[in-house]
Length: 284
Image 1 (cartoon, rainbow, N blue to C red):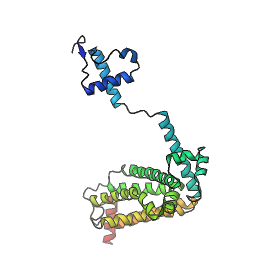
Image 2: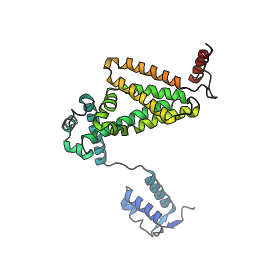
Image 3: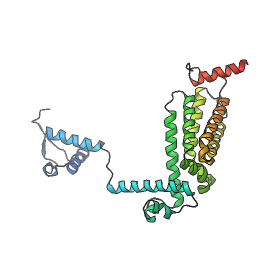
Image 4: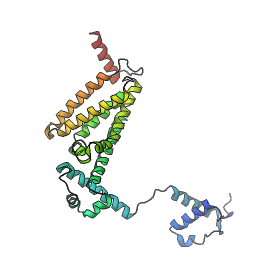
């Protein structure tokens, strides 16, 4: 279209009306743009420039206000202080006043974000579990083979269980603070992660397709027991206990493997090595 051609904006077009209003409201040159009222003639360049402004506004992420940023920072600080105190003193021996004092906040600031101590503890657990699950998933997706992915996820989980905060809050304080059933509700995400790995192993042929739900439940409970053993171990012994748990769980998983290997085994991979070991044992 030639640059000399002018366009008349149709005020009856809701989409175009919204675009023009957005450009008028957001532009730094509002005084000069006030002349571009509905029905005013605009050059083609002006029309295109304002369309670009409107398109940018539509895709531009919303900018949080200072109050929203402050609120998020306050909530994060509360969760950080609460996690440290709950891990050091336990849920029962930690008060909201102590958490507020540690974060240089008022008790009212805590109640602004959380209904009470139990709700705060649940938020701490939820954040811990989400962080650990994301690290386990990140470790697993680095491996293209389902068996290697499961072992990588297992190692990541055992590493996280050595954390004094995660081990103490999730595996020791969680059932005490929330009750057994309440704590199990927070484990649904972890259970689903274990279930996904077991199903992937079955679909790939590493595990037999039988008793799927029972297999998932038993494997999950074994992981629970391992994490609890690490959490209850003295700090100097955690690394040793973690190694023992890793060895035991790997032996159990190897015992569950299907007698027939997946057809896509690659030379040198964990699947072919395990297959050769089992073949040697069978011949003996």
